[in-house]
Image (cartoon, rainbow, N blue to C red; front, side, top):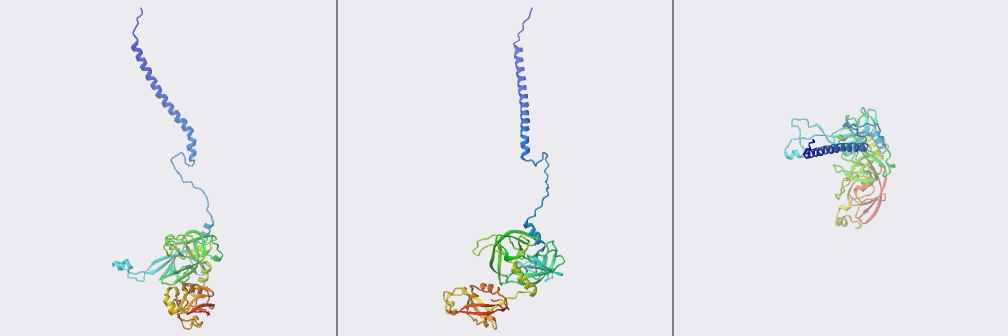
Length: 418
């Protein structure tokens, strides 16, 4: 006899067991599927990821890659040609026990136990360039304002060697000076190029010590911006400075004064002298530096080496600008025509001077020299200093309302016209 059992409970249990198995299989399938997807994705993406930065290795280490190459350009060659001849010039002066602030506040700024009143300290720094060796001596050209007021000079060579410098001569009017040093440690001298042959737009490189010798032998590049710029200035003593300058946009800063401006061949084409940072109106300016042309430099330093000064012709007068006097004085004292508004008034004439010998008198108003208009004393001085001792010049002037002309034989300057 067959016994029949109720199997309903067992069917329910099997159903639950089957569902659990299906759930586990689904989870396992998802994990495997995800793994396969990631694996396949990486397989596809691996070339892309690698190619995006092929220089980066798969390891975590980053290396500096060294490659052999040489940069040899025209500018680099030019700088290398002259850089050993470029120097820093240190203006040494006797130190004072108190400066202005110290006097005001009653503060000693130096060691009170230092009794050496003749001790020297660096007052200012500029640049220069060695242009000639002669036996045991070498000659450096720099600016007059770099050496002005010095009690001693020190020259810092390109290799860091410091040597004492001796002032051979200086000329405030052209802002040039020559220093002599021992040639023992001098490795190179610079060559002067022809500044008359320069073209506007050609490369120009300034080398020197901007802001002092800590930045010695800095090079900046620009172009020749203009030629024949008439630049006038005054020294700290109030003496006029007038240069027929090269204009450049090569960066020139305090400390570059006296350093060379060179061409692409490494020749000195100018001596850096002045930078204009703002107009008289207050408008700021950039890239306006001025250098004394090499052809003018050579003529001046040759005289400085020989005589220690520059001999220039003189008229033998003292003078004032006509534009600075009142209309009443012009009408009642000078009595020149009202339409004459510029020129140079002769305040006095020295005895036995070229002016006196030519018949010039007090209160004459000079308006032309050799046909060139004279509007100010600076104009007269600039034109006169382009002449040579022994030259003859034609001077046109007004004596009251009458216009006259006379010929002046120029002699050596004894003192500056004031």
